[in-house]
Length: 100
Image (cartoon, rainbow, N blue to C red; front, side, top):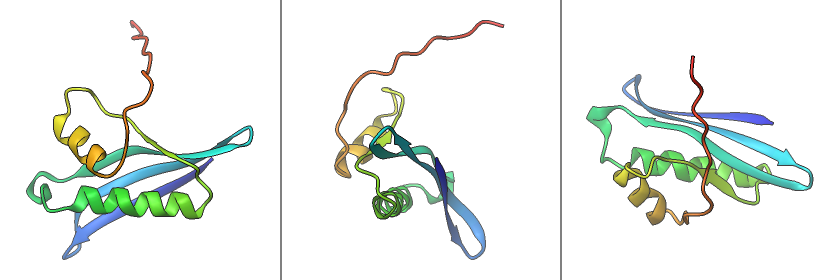
C-alpha cells in the first residue's frame, strides 16, 4: 500500500487536499481517493476537480488499473462532480455500525 497526499494552496493558505492510496490485492492494483476536502471559501473554483484529476494521473502512473471514490448518496454535489469526471456508480458498500 502506498499513500499519496495532494495539497492545494493559494498565497501559502491551504485551500484543499486529497488523500489517495495505491493498493495491490493479488494481481490487481487499484487506487482509492480516501479523503477530498476544499475549504468553503474556495469551493466552486475547480479545486476539487483538479485534485481528483491529479490524483488519478499519479495513481495511473504508479500502476492503478482503476480508482475508487466513495461518497454518501445525499452528497449530490460530489456525485455530480464524480459523474462529470467519468466515475460510474458501482456496487454497494455494506456497513455495520458498532455500538459502544
